[in-house]
Length: 366
Image 1 (cartoon, rainbow, N blue to C red):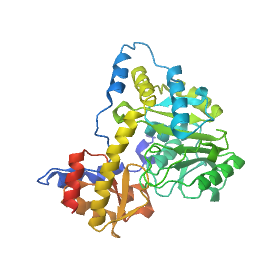
Image 2: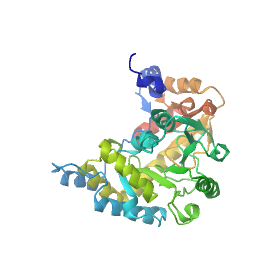
Image 3: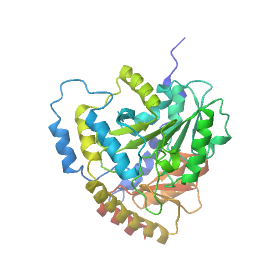
């Protein structure tokens, strides 16, 4: 009998379906404006580059656990920026970008056939991919407390949401966390856009207002890809329940999931400096205002989008028709269908393009 192919467990990679629209957008006389994937385009801050270079002579293996300086920097950042006081340095792990952790968390926790992984109805597709890789079953739902707690092993929260930009209210987070704790279900919160609140202030699942001052049964996942332009560094961290972090550490040591030493140094420097984050936030604020006004003028409705790096737009038609309409104007956006069956009339418009390209997109929309 032949080996079972991994692809039989996975959906088609969604971004491959954008290829013909990319070709159409590139044919525009003014060139393409790519607002689809959300790849950062602004420079890596100089002090972070310097920290990376200063640590470049790193012939030994990196620490899976992270350097003491990095773990201290994470705890300081959580306290200073998010008001989180319940996390100790021992309950922090560096990760190879947040997508790696999202994709492999169910497997590293030992989930398998018969286990359920819950994630929002409209969501980043890697939550489902992670469940599939483990052989578990992914369940899209905005209320995981309706599921069978005997089978439910992991609940993903995502606030601010990718793609919708919705911020989960504190009381809703508290309700889900309290239910999960009663039933022994782990809650993992993807908080990669937490510093990019525009019309609402996102709150970490580890904040006292949600956690009651205890990290028990909770993980928070963070990335520096967007807030520090470090997508190319693959730099992030997970923090929370010390027992769960210890379990993940053991698995990751065996699997060789290590963040390179120079990247750990860069991550430490990035978490210790707030000025570059505020400067980047201001860039995104300006771009958001420009695109939002242009989309509204073009007849689109913007739903949610109160935080994060995207505008969740619709004009009440199938999303692929909207993608085609944008491509004719040399603009590439992401179809809502990528994020869930209930999102087939929306598109996700990223703020991650240069000021010049954002201005070009706005002019074409108008």
